[in-house]
Structure formats: structure tokens, C-alpha cells
Image 1: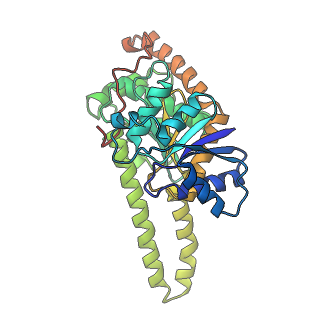
Image 2: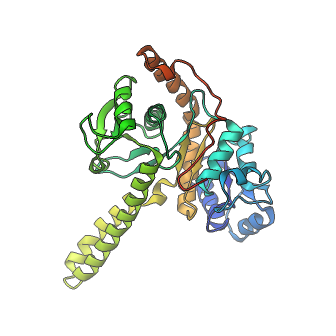
Image 3: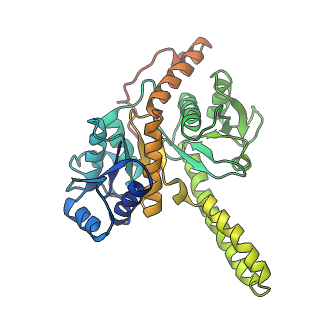
Length: 358
């Protein structure tokens, strides 16, 4: 199996991507195709005195930058992102990993691969730590304005991802709202709640913000605006908590014993809340496997994003997503939900938009 890596789109340049690819092939059983400026990539590889026989370089002279808007990025047909996505389309790779901007990645994936039948808008599934196992937030930044049918699709795809990749046999699905009662929420949330009761999923009700980290849910569904705020707030809070604990532990070093006892707990907390441990987030709903990583991803994050891509490919995630969408759409159609009666895979009216993107 070969995983394709766009090495040029991140904030830190190609070095973390090259180092992450080297770490991945040393720790996992797959190969990596690195796409970018060939001379630069080969120079970085040569500087590392490690075996890189399972790494292959494909040249790309252009780069999609963080400043490029989705439509602008599509004009860069010789960019590392465009070439990476097309390698998967041609069957030369099983999945794509990229630290480029989310809107551009979505645009290229949708245009090259199209959406799965019945999907109008893809979603990003980002996992967060809880008291127990991790929870998937769907959507965490792909679609700002959602209709109830979009949120239903997010719930179906999130449930499939949790089952096939996260290992949850019967994923518990929650709908993010401002109260646990089914009468709470805006019009979209209220209608979505009614539909989720009919969708054939293991829907256990509304989830409030404080419920995200209890471990009672495997999937929490929301629109991309809310999900992205939740994600960024959680990341900032995790960093703040670890920093506060470190400072308090240093103060406790005056008593020595307290400080020594505190540091293992701090290290465990840091690992559990560390984004680098998960590495990336899948874009669900496109007809291919796309793993989005932070633009500032380091070697460890890239390595784990490549692992996530390989795991998703090995379990035939796209096939399972397609089958589950058909299954649950049919259940809803039989329940009298009109917009699931026919499947339309023409996504031309729904250009991909990510949070903060044009």
C-alpha cells in the first residue's frame, strides 16, 4: 500500500513531511509517495542517514499556499496538492495526507473524486479526548451553514467512521445543542433531532457542551462553524491546563515530593490531549480518503496522519461509508422523509466551503 503525501503545503515547509514520512515507513507497513519540488525533497532525504527505499518522490513545481482560496487553488493544476489527489484518482496511491489549507484540500478532493452518492457536503471528523475514549466531532470545520439533511449525513458518516476506524461496535451518536431536552436548539437542531430518531442510528439524544468530554458519546454532530469553535477552544484549553499544571508542579518542587509525584500525571495528560498523537482528521463524504493535518504539523503529527490514512484504506472506509449512506437514506425515505427519496450525486451546486474560506 502507498500513501500519498503533499509535502509542500504546510506552514513549516517540507522538512516535517519528509521526517514524518521516514518515521512512518520505519514504524508501519506501507510506502509513502512524497509530492513536491523534487530537488528539495531529495536533498532533505539524502541528509537523513536512514533507509528510505519505501519512499518515492514525485515532482511538483507549484504549491497551494495557506493564502490561496479554494477556487484559486484549483487553477494550480501542477501543484503538489493537485498531483497528490490525482495520484489517488489514478490508483497509484490509497489515500492523501496534506497540511495545506482545508478549503483548498476539499476543493481538489471534490473536483477530482466527486462526492459519494447522496452527499451534498462533506464533513471533517476530528477526535477529542474524553474521560474514557476519544469522541469524533462531525463536522469540525468543513461546512458553516447546514441543513438538517447535511447533519443527518454527518451523523451517518461519523457513526461509520467510529465503527470502522475507531473500533466502536455500535457508536453512540449525540447532537450538539444548548440543552439535553429535545425541545432545545435552533430550528435546524430541532428538525435534525426528529430525523435522527428515524434514521436507524444509535442516537442517544442531545449533547450539551459539557457532555463532549464525559465519554458518553462516540460521535457528536454539529455544523462546521460550531464544531470548529469547539475544536479550537478545546485545543487552547488543553494547552492552558498543561501549562498551569507545569507551573504549579515547579512551585511544588520546593517540597520536592509533590513536584516529583505531579510530573507523571502531567506527562500523561499532555499525551492524551496532544494533537500530534492523532495527527489529522478525515474528510468524510468524498469518494476517496483525504486526511487533513494542521499547517504547523511536526514530524510526529505527519507520521500519525499517514498511519490514520493507511488504517482508513485498509478497512475500506469509503466502501462502508457508501453502503451506510444508502442504508440509512432508505430507512429515512421509508419513514416519509422526502429529501432522502432520491439520490443525487451532482455536487455542482454545492461548492466546498471551509470555515474562514471563500
